[in-house]
Length: 171
Picture 1 (cartoon, rainbow, N blue to C red):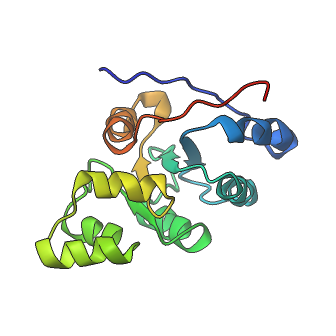
Picture 2 (cartoon, rainbow, N blue to C red; picture 1 turned 135 degrees about the vertical axis):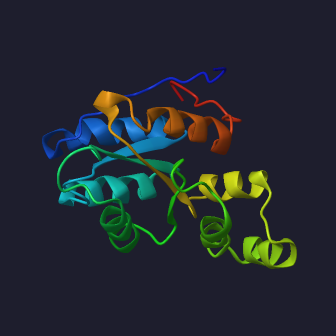
């Protein structure tokens, strides 16, 4: 659609960690790809710590959900326990509604007050929570079959903010 992105694809192997870390300071948002069958691995945790160090908001795409051993609920539980409680499924099979919206609200005191008063959250509040690294949207799919990719891109367009500053090069 109207989404304009510059993608910086970094290696997903520990041998290239320094190359990946060099890119992090210029990112507005990261998409962390996690294998559905393998779940959270050691290098996933390393990348997560690096993204936290550089305060990069993160979307998570759980890939290979079409393969044997991929279990949505198990991977989501791993992401929550091993990465952050703010990891919340935003995928089309489980749209951001009642239970998920309540999960989003629990990540922030003001958001919880708004949710308790109104029973909902403004989209700008959800965007702000993502930008402040309190909420980490998760999408599930199979990239080779393009399953879930449209949902991820639509969510990315809906839940991210356009960068308000540009990095100063040569400074």
